[in-house]
Image (cartoon, rainbow, N blue to C red):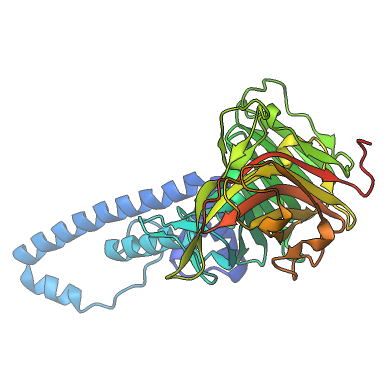
Length: 448
């Protein structure tokens, strides 16, 4: 038997209302993935409309010529529509209505409310698919295909939950857009920033697809994280496995648990899968190497400093009607190190910079679990008296144990976490904050 015949018979039996629940699920998958099946139903509709029109014309002529016979025919018992014997004895309007309902039910688009925002911290922005803009996204909001989310500061993050219980987190300066996906597929576009995906317990069936400017990642039931910019992406798989496609040439590789893959727009080499490198406990950001800047503006060099970043203003919503202005500098640690940078309780962060006016400076960093998910932000405030006088360069060494967790339910302490980005800021007042060096030191500096 021709496979198409059996599929067509199944679809026609559905229209006739004679399918089992298992066959109904098969039909849902068929219409979501097979364009020829949808085309078959469109053909049925078009031909049914044509035949019905012809029959209506014929009946009109018969009534005009033989009015008594036509009245008698209308009193006859109506025979139920049977699509299995499809000699077009159908009611055209009924077919069109059924097809319209099926098209809505089985269309491969993300349904409203398929993604729900569960946590929001810091400055964020929502761009709705229908033009709506919100500067303060709230927990509980439902998202649909076409909606775009932005976390707009170094210490901002958004957590989302999908219908199957999977969670998705973006943080830092990240932009995420919900895309139309196939049936039961979750598809997103991450144009910049960091993303962590954590599947629900036992969720292995539905694919999870993330597109970046350089890569497309498909995972079923795996835990992974992505860091991306407009030119470079790195994907780490921590549980399960993933298929990663290079957007430039369409080549695909399989990435297993404990492995990673990276590429950039200018790289013509094929994708190379490698084991995730072992963590290191020392890291220094050399501004002369032009690191990945999340926030900040480059300042002209001086006789003493050849590379430095000045703070940029940032709107920070406190509530729907109240906001603060932050003046911040932020750098991505992942972009300036080939190894994960591990944090210990006895480690220190060293900052070197200056302010033009005396002002309290808040220092912070974000972290994730080693081979795991987003672990939150940590901050400490330093009073002007602990810094150099205004206009002079200062250097502070801050034990990580002094940093407070912004959300202790994610991680109460930095011990054993991986550093992802580092920032410094002033609140409400532009103190002319500049940063020219950041360094993570273990208990005993490896530079000594």
